[in-house]
Image: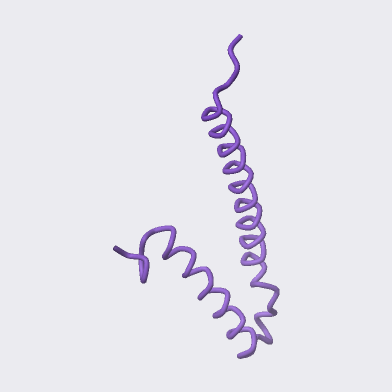
Length: 77
């Protein structure tokens, strides 16, 4: 049996870290989807401008992420 080379070992560690980070993102996305399914905790009968502002802030942050992920907006190029 041969020992893994330092490069292989490093790549395996990088893959493990990548998979762990992806799982973290998947958990966050699932939580966000659940929150969205529940109107982000807002009561549709009493929603006000404060909830609109909060949701707008969340949308702005997500747009920054999606722009980066899909090379759009200021990340287009």
